[in-house]
Length: 369
Image (cartoon, rainbow, N blue to C red; front, side):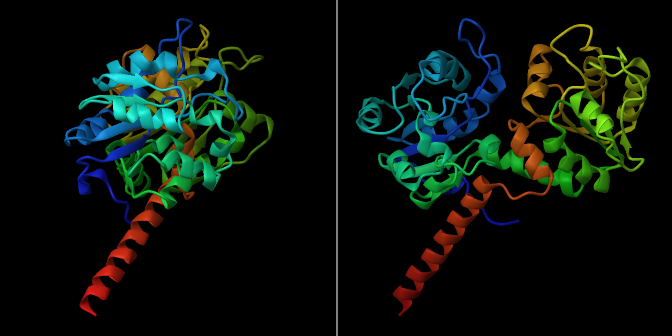
């Protein structure tokens, strides 16, 4: 495994730190965050960095798709109080992520406070991975820390380009997610099963194929199963598509025979990876298949890893977020990493670590000469 430097190597005393987080969460009509787990995911790293005297920390996130322009509907301002509660630290908000307001905001911080920056996607340079925009993001800071595994599959300014400018490190949660996914991908306990649901067969098919190769069974539901059936995609006997549906015409949820079959397989498993619901879980009675399988997982002693926004929503609604195994914050990043793809965000951190090692060796050699 290539080296990535983590924050345990760093003395943050008196440093200004840009921390990339993922606060792209669903909000209720009052503007309160519904996915508290994603807000809380960076708490350990924030606490660790703030333990150093004189350190200044700014939190940088995207939210929604404002298409590279300022749109108050996608402002992070309403999340200020939610972020403060989730992290357990006083949080100040500034209305931009670059420029003088960021510099002023950092100066205003006292020990123990953090700064929440405005949505990085208000600038088109974010998604185009513009180096000049990355330099603007980096300008007020001494150190960059990526704590958002969930965006590591994006080749964007606040994920990759910025690592060419600032000394760059991985946050504690990012490394934890990478290591857990490595563990269950490379050396799962058998029987190992994957439960794949949700939508978009084109994004889920590479993952199904990878699990088909390495795991003992792949249980497929949701729109992914419907699309696989409609497209006549062929699988080995390891991949189990629904044998029945609650409504054979609408096919909005797996049926009772399929649910019972899947539950029996879950009960025997020693490793379970779950990404995506088995049906239209937002609407009763089409949540039945998903709920039954989640209940079976909650009673299992298997090593369980969960990923995907809808899966997190289901767990949070059932107050099961800390009862069903390890929860990965990134659905898309998890899919790509488990499929064997190189994630640009991780590659950028690896390159930054390598460059630092080469630079250190060169400086050491020059001293000897």
